[in-house]
Figure 1 (tube, one colour):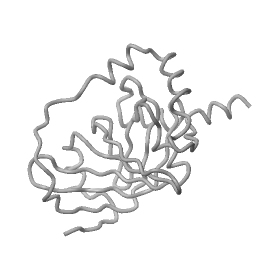
Figure 2: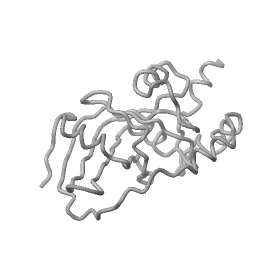
Figure 3: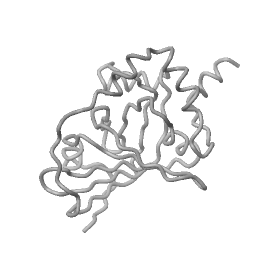
Figure 4: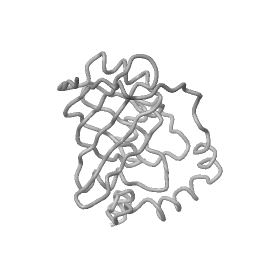
Length: 190
């Protein structure tokens, strides 16, 4: 049976902080729905209404494009071991530009000033509601560890090549929506 809550309660925080994996879902009018798995190692709960993760360079940037166009964002966590549970954070999201003041502040305060290789931006959700449901149908899995492929790929490219990759692959969604990834840079040049 599902239950709704107005904010992230202590038992929700405890559950979220134990997870190794979560999913981010976003959409915009007339676009594909995007669902992306994320490692929870770069996720932080800021308070009972705010969560953020460091988004790393990838082949697309759908979440940022959808937030610019629509703003709706969902984070979903599900127990893959122990007692069954599914927990969703529903809210409005925004991308925080790498190198921007809010990004720098959260990097210091929530992440100890450390970025993972390939950091592209932060994705912040202003939580409007929290839903829990049973999760009885979610299979049990054993956690085997983190993959290091993205770390190795980003480190081998270096910052200059990562910038070029982002400019080529991350400025539009697959549906042609702008992501705003270099928007602050463009405004600074004017």
